[in-house]
Image (cartoon, rainbow, N blue to C red):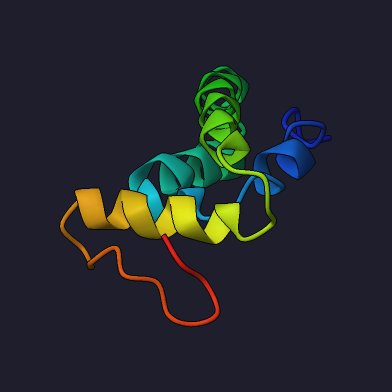
Length: 88
């Protein structure tokens, strides 16, 4: 039995843009899971779960899109101008 089977579903669920913002983090977590490295998976999962707090900003469902877009703008990947119907 794979020792990280119980960890994989929670690891996959918080992909609300986090993988776009921190691709290495999610890639490392996936690799650790494939290698059955439960300690690393638990540690990375904890970091991923803490990132979920950024998605509590705003009051509309579009907040997830806005947070992701703005984080990518801060990283210099794109600008923070939202297309219609979304606005900053």
